[in-house]
Image (tube, rainbow, N blue to C red; front, top):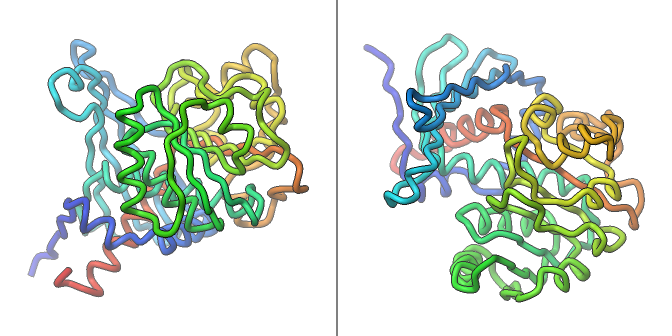
Length: 320
């Protein structure tokens, strides 16, 4: 009898099979387990219509996940997603076991990775979260940060009020007993936030470092190319910097590459990675007043952890 492949592509089912607290722990275990992720391959489609990205990762048993994602910017005008993808999970024997919706998994694991970083880098009593950005990722980032810290207030800022209100309504459906509001001034919100998560597609900085208050944790997840930035120079200069992986950050993180290339900061400013944090090889937050920064460009290790968790939970409850 040939082994069957599970197709798990419904976004609502994926969310149910990957509850945020369990997903955060699964990603921590993956970085603790010496998982490996070869460099991602980025291929330009014929005619430069778009990009195909291949992201593999392996755990210590040989279990493998490969995400295949496309980025077609012109899709936006056609009413289609600009980023689409799937994740294929293979057993340690190389047997295909599952195919998952890559878009849903990517959003969830991105939020979970930032929440994992927050465990080490934000103050334990952080209560005010500022979400900069109003896209599909923004509500997941809000949910993830609320899981690990006692957030009492969420502020949302976006370039248009309409989109900010849309994000607010989604966030309210994900969190309970938390005040959620749209703010007109990002500058005012920055000065009172304990945690700031930026999930934008902005090519130029939207976060002003001069306004950061002592003790702030800055979480940058929107930019994933060398040419784009969400935070200005003063943000990175004032912060102790951590990344998901050095390899990814030093290839794709414009928020760090640009100031590195201009000599504004040096490589020594990158204190550690998620793996080094969970293994205790580097210290997270050193004191209540320091500003900490986590820059994420995404790792296939996170995709692998999420895919394994989702399949395990699906098999425990086959009728889900």
